[in-house]
Length: 154
Image (cartoon, rainbow, N blue to C red; front, side, top):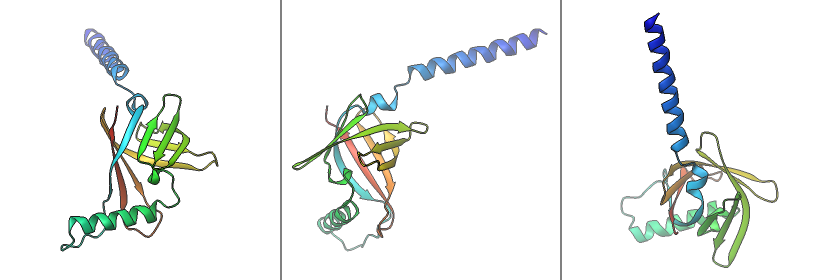
């Protein structure tokens, strides 16, 4: 009987500790709030030619980015401003668009909703106070996954 009470006490303490740790964790929504700058685009599975210089590779990457992103708003944006009210402002050169955002799943899916009822989902693969990384599969004939890395401005 005494052993059962000890196990129940230990289990109760473990649950209480777990709940306390969860409540202390910063939510991804709060971490994302603020202004972020697009740092780099990478295509993880694009064939790389050994003799390609960095300058040539950047031209290829810019071309692929333009082709992949020609119909997607986020690919034209250089700054993403996550507002606490669920609004995301995408800013680029001579361009600004406001859309809705929220976090889904286990805090690993960024959902973007446009006015035309179009919804996009991106895998949030890394998130810290000063950097986040999004991954997504492209629908075009470019092979592989595109990865966008952002750094916090403020």
